[in-house]
Image (cartoon, rainbow, N blue to C red; front, side):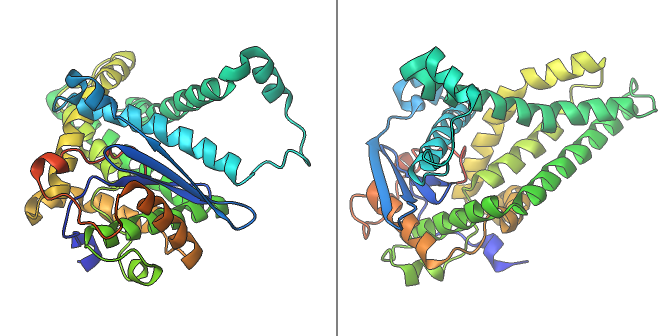
Length: 336
């Protein structure tokens, strides 16, 4: 098997991140940095202090509870910094393009709250799309197939078919979006993010040359986490039987927090562990990173390094070794 798949950094740090439009977000246990390459070639970096919701509220930090909470929290942060990165690189040239009627209406309606409204609207759309495509659609398609699903054997077969459809849709979606030119560049920044973190976690100086030699496959990537979520959902749904289509969909939506909680704990354990048998659960997601990450150029690596340096006090410092510090690592809601 590809050595990159089994590759594991020397240290499991608290650093995570996400690829943006012409940029990279890096996040430590208490700081977040957004670095983007602006249209004039300059690297813009903004740093802010952050406190994860799992640390603000003790209950949300409990095992199996923190999974769903961290996932939503990371999605909110991820969409927010993605929107901010788009503004920084001036994707929409306000001098050449008139605002749409929708944008004008939204700004008139919500004023200073326009950005937050768009943020949570985008989050709602992202969640609805994900649940609809990867949860409800496979259930609906399976329900249309002409065989008896009421028996124990029929129920298991239906859930197995649903799982195959779910995986197929997920792989097809990743493959299709990877063919988009703009998304391909985001995937290159994703690769730069992974390579930079590998360099840091292997206790090497953060230089372009050092970063280039590392793999773009990382055990804590959000791609791997999402695949773990799909696998856990297939296993869990197999125990729920097969019912009326509406009941099936309600059961699947109701179990999403449970699935996220189990997946998160298993994902964290597999990412830290040296046990190859345990890490097998991550193999499909690690292999999928061959698509969701691409080799970056030097300019992209420079952006990733700038972002990473902004969240670590010293670029040459070693990553935390203790179990307690490792438990503080970022949630896999973004790219990493």
